[in-house]
Length: 96
Image (cartoon, rainbow, N blue to C red; front, top):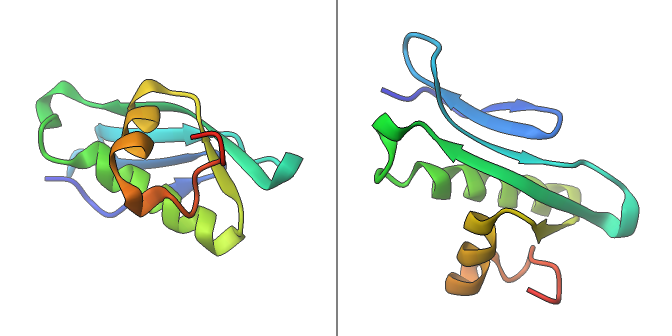
């Protein structure tokens, strides 16, 4: 079972009860154009299909809102999520 979101500089992740990685999303925290590139999303195969990647992206989107920055989707998952879901429109860079 996954535990609460954990935050490090440039990374949000989940671990299970044995402290094994469940999933993570990585980004570059930069002041350049008030934009954070989102570079990587990973979910352990044992946990796929449970909405973990979306939970991680939701947590990052909320962090971006709190910091008044935009997210630039670099990884394929985030690019697709930004195209499919309007809930990220306020944090997506204008070209996405």
